[in-house]
Amino acid sequence: HLRNQKGIELIPADPDYCRARVIAVSVNGIDAALIIPEKTVRIHGSHTLELLAPVMLKAALGIDDGDTVEISVKPVIRE
Image (cartoon, rainbow, N blue to C red; front, side, top):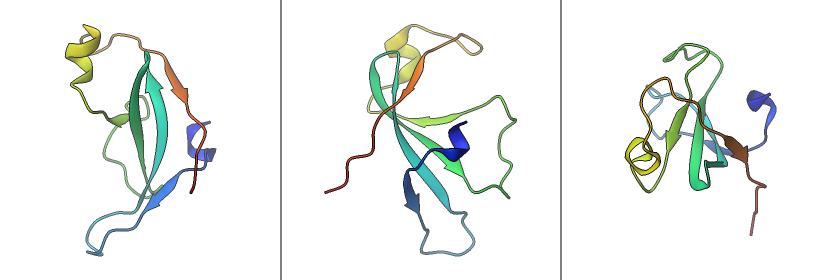
């Protein structure tokens, strides 16, 4: 389950914003970050993931809303 994956914790400077964890992932081979808000935050439904990537994923992958993608969790490397 993704909520059990370790990641990098985001702690906002402004307490009005929620905490979250960032997990390094690959989406159909494109590096990205999965953002998991703290459990009390319900921005999206249970079937929606929030991803950040260096490219526009839909355009880069040629996909539309509702299309299936493969998401692979990458190991966390800490220096």
